[in-house]
Length: 366
Image (tube, rainbow, N blue to C red):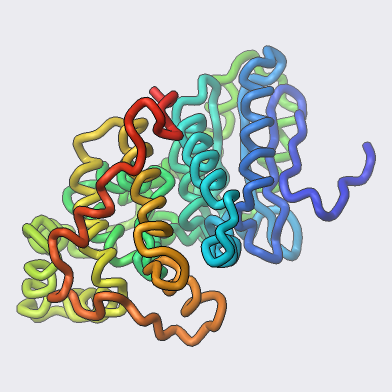
């Protein structure tokens, strides 16, 4: 077998009768570029129509080798640069990423995600649609977008809104990071394995004589513990507070609750974009009553508004990325700066589709 060039950011191989994808951009924690999205899509479409491939499995890679990090999300430095320069590839990125998310959720063969290490944002987008979502003791799952003036996209409205009770609102607004067994309790993972066993499981896929796709999934599942960890959040309090009508009411309830959870949650929310907290609460509640394709179409309009409704450096998202990843001063200048200054028209702007139905970039999803 010929050596794989070091700049190959997605390694696609067929081992035995399993299509194997390795995200291979470890220095960037496997953050997704447009080229990576295209490479994953191309492989999935080819394997979907290849009868010799029974199932697909995807993993990340760390600086020490396979596994150790799954995917930290989309390439936010690219978003920042593209938004400021007017690079049209920014539009292509989100259209093609969301189409890939839909392809994974609707894939006709087992798609198994080894969610070891960091699994955030776009990493959740390429794993939550898996038929088997596997976590380890190193897993760190989150949708932390409110921290960069964005919203939980890649289908985040769809899958977070289907968490137990009002956990979806809580996770979407705070961006809280979940460990592997916590993710199982939240309904965001299916099984747990010790990370030290991943290499052996991966290697076995090429040498085990599988008869069909279901047997590949059963083989992987046979290595897993399905015991969820105890929830480290107070579900009753989460349901009470995050069912309230709006963000100001949620904050008032947190401020009136004498618990460490309430105090830390209120403190965290006060660091997030006030505007996007309002937008995200509305997003999760709309998505709860939507199918996947409609939720992704909603998000595609929302993400365009994030970068174009207030363009360039005035964008809440561009400012959030600047503070976190460019200047790294961790002092975003949110606009509006206070929750009380967010008006209904500001929120409504994010839910106005910039295209007619027949011209929507994701009109073909069903």
